[in-house]
Length: 111
Length: 111
View 1 (cartoon, each protein chain N blue to C red):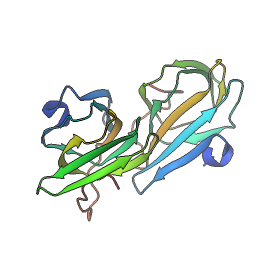
View 2: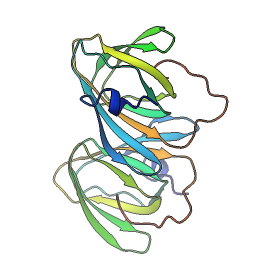
View 3: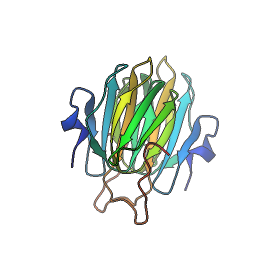
View 4: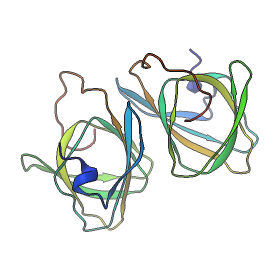
């Protein structure tokens, strides 16, 4: 398990945790990249507007543009990210500790 | 079940929902009150700083002062709220649909 708070501790901060959830705050600057890491099923909430490239474990890439104030679902996945825009990334992750429901795929990026 | 989006639809907006979670954005102005309503186990994240009085189903009241950028746990509970500060309330709720773990109490307000 490549925990993002271990792979990129300068960018991911744990701001709350109990037995049901862990809440992370992520920040970076344009041009910065993360190392490959895993997310469990999570809600993300955008605290700023930003543009990122996400690279999956098989090498596939998608570019995502998100606007401040969006809540999205991030299905459990391994990826790395790069800030390809000209604004900082600022995102909240609410990670669910309940196991993934059976039948889930592994779509790259937020739904 | 007194769903806050039914009791106070001018203040609670659903911004995301799937089979695992529902995400609400709450906004009010100083002096405004909500009707009694129920929350499931939820993560709250403060999008602004504000001061509120929460009144439980038994009539007990607590005053809470929260600062922008805090993630807190809100155990499942019935309450009503009043903005007793001089700033708007702006909060995100990530409601968990998984049932409450056995043994949980019902503490008023965020942990």
